Picture 1 (tube, rainbow, N blue to C red):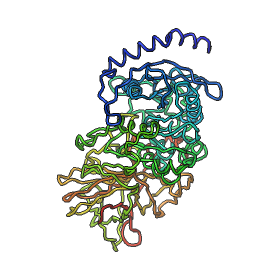
Picture 2 (cartoon, rainbow, N blue to C red; picture 1 turned 120 degrees about the horizontal axis):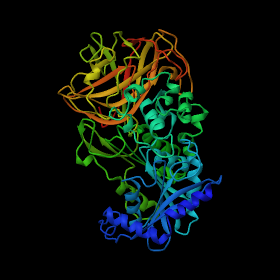
Picture 3 (cartoon, rainbow, N blue to C red; picture 1 turned 60 degrees about the vertical axis):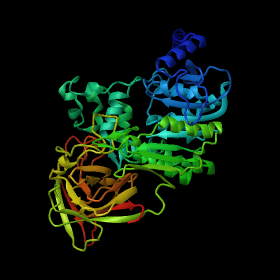
Picture 4 (cartoon, rainbow, N blue to C red; picture 1 turned 120 degrees about the vertical axis):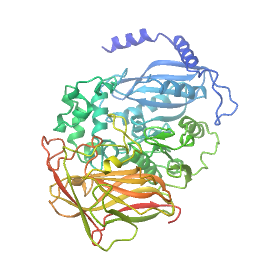
Length: 612
């Protein structure tokens, strides 16, 4: 079988000479060959002619062969190398070709490799499980090649970003730097779940619909225009029990999806592939980039903090950087309902190039003397450079829930105040899993056509099962930047439920845009590695970790907190039964009670910067 595969590849890609012709053709077609202006990183330099060598075999330690395309300057010699490892196909349109040709034109070797079991590479793909060893072996193979000068970095976003963390956690001696974009650092806590709640739309859309086979499938066939009604996303994600939802669309058991459902807590299955367990073994600096509305924002922020505090060498800790813009799963100028201005866009290729020029070529371009954190402040719509994250000097202020009547809906009596209320109060609502609050905006991407970003929440806030607490109109700006925590005193009449929290910026016209969100599956109140069911109707103080943010609440605006128990289909519906995840075929309605004021002062902790 392997001989047939080799023969087939040999027939398709005859020799290096033909590869050179292919490379020049593509370069001319994309307008990249010999015509692209020099960048600030290499002013006045002449761009290299390039050569593309297709389907190069890279052996792994167990004998499995992975295949890579190599983009290189046509002039013989040894060069620094930038490598990407992808499950999406090394010839992916408008992604790898353009970027790697641009790197090669600037004096780098660019390598794109299909990961194990994907596209041309041999073996079986099990998401996340082999990327650490395979990444290490790929880096060390590159270091031994005649074209390598021994300086190697990794590149890529999302799953490709995770691949960088996985490889770096094995301390490969030939690796010099990584540039993980929109990447998770804990596959359980900031990919598969948030606060223990299963990210259904992403996990199902990505894990079952698009990725179970060797080649990625399009997701449009699950929309109403292409699919029988019973198989559209709107219907199929309502299927119970969750554990066999793969049969409804894939038609067979997708083992990795079933494993994700089965391993509902942060157990050894997840710890074995968690990058956050191994920051001390990452010996090189990491430039972390992401978006305030990206699904993996927690990973971006945790990657920076983890490396700054626990990175394996002083050089790795010092050289680690952070950049976060007002984006989703990639840079832009507008997202959701808001336009942040043309200056919101950052050309990450140029930023990568400066980073690699410094670490791989030794060019003194000043990147090492800049402040390590660059973040976009929404509301003010400006970039700022900061000394660290969290920002030094941050004041953590409690914003308390109170009210002069039931807080149900935006027309209710729920209020927020920085003064701790002495008067006790309660609010109630019913959470019916058969009528969940639907996902509209927030931190999401890439699975089903779920809407992400800053979207006006007023339609959701009109529901009776959403509690809404709003401050008075602000008379001066309040700048919030950093990690956010909700401390909620609450009870439910069953053994388990969910608490979903949104921090919202209310504009003078009443439009309401989320800037941070968080969810907690109540059974994980004592930690994501501990499943402890609740005593019905007992009041607990739940601590809910929310997404970090940077937002200036302007004068004339108001600050708002929305509380409910569902955000579907971004997260699966908690059936309120306390049974193991994914096993329920039926659900029950839960009666929720929220306490505030007096001895049970529910509040959100806001990181205030630049004074208060």
